[in-house]
Image (cartoon, rainbow, N blue to C red):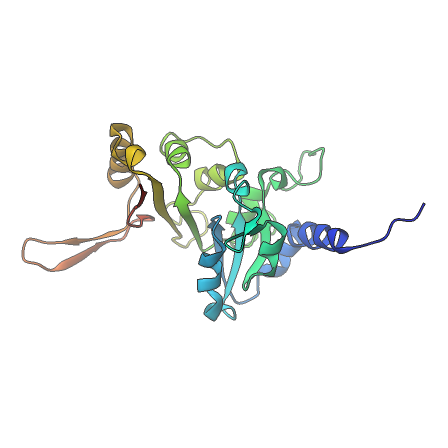
Length: 228
């Protein structure tokens, strides 16, 4: 029995094609900056629309972030619709990490492909920057403790923190967002302190004479967003 081909088939094809290793290979020399964006808020992508000619965005969705994207409202569209946003070349979930199942020795591993700038490993696009906005309390805890139990935390765990592998310093920027009780909890303060003291945070400090001094680290914490 023949089955009609509709939008669902088109969306599946678009997603599988954009998420393929071949698409990463084609992006290697596209002349654009490559941004990995872990976000569940499409407005962030739309704000970057003016830079479409110079910017390629690949979105990483955690399982929790996907729960916010079931078409509940205009601000919460479906996951498949993210591919129609300006600059977005692919949307990845945890199941994309190992590629077509079953994984075989020598096959690509997605979080490694993201980070390989010059193709030494295979064909990676060499992400120039990773932005996590919002950064939840759960993901913050995972980052600080070195966990790599999903695609996003694996990317962070394998990040070339000093440019010794890719010969180019690349940055991670995070924007913590949680309710006020979570933010005021002592464990959160400890985790943020760990990032600032041990992770080479990039920030601007004021010297006693009032002069601005940039600490050129690889990890940046954007001012926190607190919910009631």
